Length: 465
Ligand SMILES: Nc1ncnc2c1ncn2[C@@H]1O[C@H](COP(=O)(O)OP(=O)(O)OP(=O)(O)O)[C@@H](O)[C@H]1O
Ligand SMILES: [Zn+2]
Image (cartoon, rainbow, N blue to C red; front, side, top):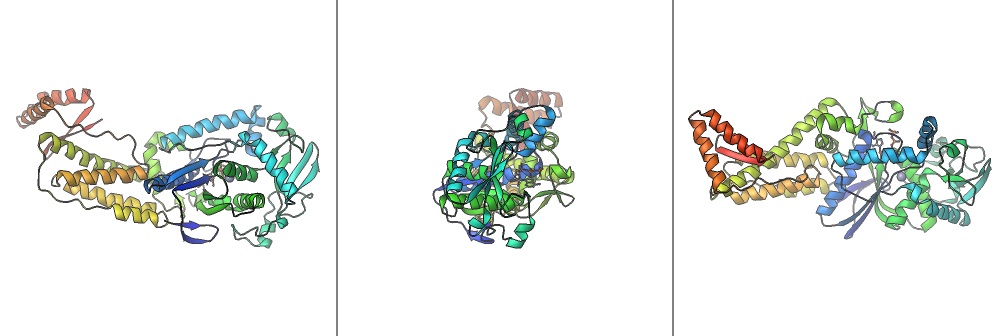
C-alpha cells in the first residue's frame, strides 16, 4: 500500500513483511483527552485493522507519557503526586477509547522504562553524543546535535531554522539545538515525587528519549511505522530519530506517518488554546461510532474542522450504513425463514474499490463513499436480490465496517421457527383486518424476547434489538 512518508516527503509503496510493527506517540496524561487525540488514535487503529485485514500480523504500540512538566505542574498545584494524576487520566483515556471501538494494543508507560532510559543515556555519553551539565541537585544530560550527522532530515528544517527553535534555552548548552536527555530534579519534581535515582543524581528523563526507548525495547530496531500528530515532527520525532540512530547505528524507523489536526474554526484543537472538546462529551451526545465516523471522514493529511453539525451529519451517515447492513441481514433471515429461492438481482461487489481507496494513501473518505455505494445498492435491491447475493453483500459491508471499526458484536437476525412463523403471519392478517390491538400484542411478545418486528411493503422483517 502507499502512504505519505514524512522522511522521504512523498508517497511511498510500503514494503511490509508478514509482521508489521507500529509505534504511535500517545497522550501526555494530565487531563481528559480531546477530539484531536481521538483522531490520532482512531487513524492508527484503522490502519492497523486494515493491515490485519490484508493478513499482516500487527504489533501495535501506543505509549502513555506519565512523566512530564505538565503532569508535574498539575500535581503540584493540586498537592498530589505526579503518578496519581497520570494514572487517573490514563484510566479516563482508556474509557474514552473503549467507546471509540479501538482495539487493544501494547500501552507502555515511561515510568516502567526508567532503567532502560538511564542505560541508553549512559551509552550516548560514552559514544560521544551527549554531555553533562552541573545543576543544583545533580546533572542535566544533553544530546549534542552537531555530533549527529543528518539532524533535520525528518523535519526538513535548515540549520538556521532549527536554531530559531530554541525550545529549551539554556546558556549551558553547547549548541542551541541541543536537547535534554535527562533533567536534574527541581523543586517541583521533588514535590510531585517525579524523580528517579541515576548516575547524575535524582532526576527524570527528557520527553524525546522516552519514545526512543519504549519503541526499541518493545519493537526492536528498526521497526516499520512510526506515527503521531504532525505537531510532533519537530522537535519530538526529529530528536527521537537522532537519539535512536545514535544508539543503534541504523535508521530506526522505516516509515514516518503523521496525521493532520482536528481544528476548530481553523485553529488546532489544543489545551493551550482553550478550544478543546472532550471525547466523552461528544460520545455522550452522539455516540462513539458517530465520532469515529467523523474522524475517518477526512483524509489523514488534511485538517478536520470540528463542528456540532458535522458530528450530527456523521451520525446520520453511520446510521445509514448500519441500517443497510441490517436490511441485508433481515432479508436473509426472512428468505431463510419463509423459503428463499428467488432469481434475483445481483448486488455488485465493491470490495476492490474499497481496498483500492485504502491502499492508495489510506483514503478513508473515499472508502466511506464506496461503502455508501454498496449500502445504497443493498437498499435498492433488498427485496429483489437473491439469497446468495444478499449474503455476499452483507459479508462485504460487514467486513468493510469492521475494517473501519464501525461495527462491533453485530448480532444476526435469527431464522424463525415454526411457531414464530405462524405468529408473524397471524399478525399480518390482524393488521390487514385493522385489528391493531392483536397486532400490537404480537409485536410486544417478540419485543420482550429482544426481536424487533419491522413492517415493510413486502411484509414483516425483524432484527435483534
Ligand atoms: N488537535 C489535534 N489534532 C490531531 N492530533 C492531535 C491534536 N492534538 C494532539 N494531537 C496528537 O495526539 C497525540 C497525543 O498528544 P499529546 O498528549 O502530546 O497532546 P498535546 O499536543 O499535549 O495536546 P494539547 O495541545 O491539547 O495539550 C499526539 O500524537 C499529538 O500529535
Ligand atoms: Zn513520542
